[in-house]
Image (cartoon, rainbow, N blue to C red; front, side, top):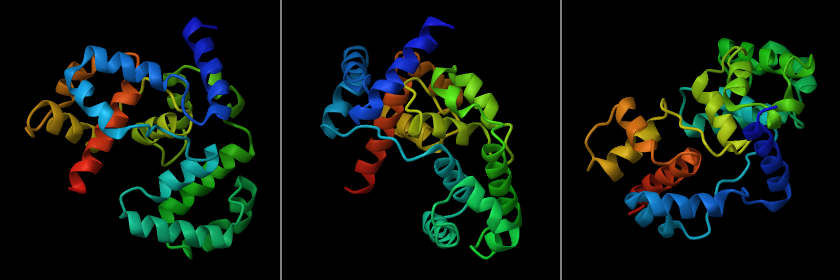
Length: 222
């Protein structure tokens, strides 16, 4: 097993009880030391930090439901799904079936995606117990084999569920906008521009991305 993957497994195990990702403070210090924008940005958010968004199946199911619809519509559909499947387990979702999922406000395709996801978990076709020890790209490769899950959704899962420290979601519009606003005075940026800026963030690209997202929250509330 690669040394980096072994270290990651230890990090994930440690942070389960800590609440705060164990690498967070080190990452903040390193980013502020290397990057003049991060030096100004990070202190604005005090003790705020990335946190886990629930169990794996729930996180992925909510991601699928929320694709290409408004936040309010996604929340409404999710609440109806919870009324149908209060525990939201793979077995409960499979038992509910496609017709009932449609009644929650899901499209036929999304209902199929949720059932496929539940089938993967129920049949243990996913190596969930090994994810903490697997490299980022290996987990992503396994996830995108599920219908309805693309690279962006997989990367969001690595950030918000597995709390991986070095994810750079280049397809995320929020990341690109955050780089545009903070590094290019609002000028449009390309994926190539984002890669160039992020080269200075290794191995804490998740942390830098998170602070750029938060910077947009601050802009929207002022």
